[in-house]
Length: 348
Image (cartoon, rainbow, N blue to C red; front, top):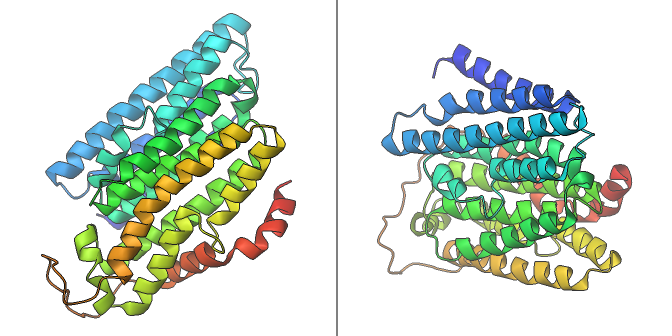
């Protein structure tokens, strides 16, 4: 892609998100979300592959539907209350419609069906943008309006997302689909606690972005998109394979890695709010997610040659990719748990 076009698209992505962050009027927030969608569409379709075009079409249609629902919800709210401000979402029909639209935008269950198929059709860098940056603007709106949305709806969205995210990833062999279901499960953790402690949602979102970035950049470095080829990477780059296994366990939420921090704080907050059944359900769904991360770790680090793999062992060629972002994100994905008290103090 032409570097000038790429720079324009990436700056438009930043502009759209910033516009949504800074807006207090529904129309400006909607415009920011639309700029975001229109900027990432050419990035998704840049490879001219039928699967990439199909993924782009699916993504565009779902995002356009969600944007139309947001516009309709804000118009309904303005019609009922006379207010266009984001903080005055007092009409229950409008707030439910608005939450459904944003759930469709970020891929919460049961509006998640587009997410695995779209991510599967993209290259790893565009998939990384879709899984991280594209979540920021909708989450800014959800955090601003969380107190006006029905708590039961948020709880149902949260539990169903963690359940679907865990269950859906169990039977997958494609790594991008596994990361898509992982994203759905993490979104559920963020939504479940947003009505009680929005700062924990921000901590969970930050750690999710760090861990997902580390996972995507690792896969890009090793040129891997399937479990079968993941199993042959140890012979090419053993150190990268070791850190990848730890990153995957961190995404699964095992102590003493970074991914344990948001789950621990969220379960603690749910228990404080006298919701032990919901906290138990969330912990059990996290175990389902952990199973497919352990599958990946087993395939990467616990299978040694000779084995019955159908794929050929890759050549040990020198890579031209820069490894600094991968090193930074991997370090953060593995070692931030001791910083939990400081992070919590900064956020509150």
